[in-house]
Length: 242
Image (cartoon, rainbow, N blue to C red; front, side, top):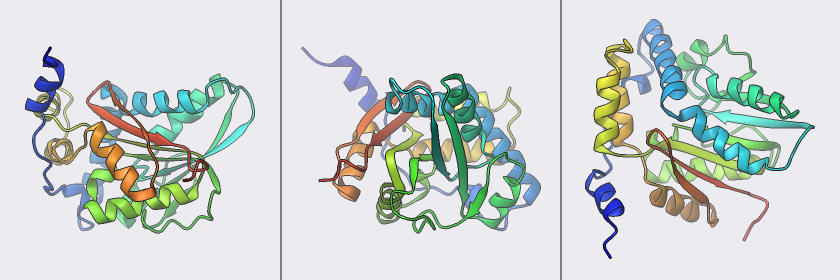
């Protein structure tokens, strides 16, 4: 019997594009950056970005109640996801101490009001010791890099994490690209956010692509999922080294 769902998904999945996101430009006006990051945070809340990360944390901390944990969010934006992680942990009695990383000085300045310590650093050369953080998170950052840079990023996440690495990104789809474009108008996203949202989707990944990238980077077989809101996640435990 043909798998109509898989066939339809394949037809709706364009080839991966590089594109150019305005938010990657270090010369972008600070006010535009702040507004765009706020739009990203709203999209995370409304369209599954937060939910995808919490779903993976629920797996990593299944059966765990109480205690403390550290979480590093690489490419934290306004720190919206770490804030939700702290809330999620508090409901389970787990106190998450969170740290954010941003590479761009302009992005770091925009995120400075977030309730988490912020480190300015290159995601491909994190200034943290091996296995020094319980959970290392990377949400909607991987698609900004080409293949070689992306592999370097995944190796760094794997090096620093002690318990779990969680990578969450956009799932590439014509439907998702059209959806974010159309939704951006009633949500009053600015023009930069509208443009970057579509480009980000077309730079995104399928779960199979994420699994192959993780395998090529660190030799691990990641647990991968397609999540609600056209998200794809990959997660693995670094201590289970080959």
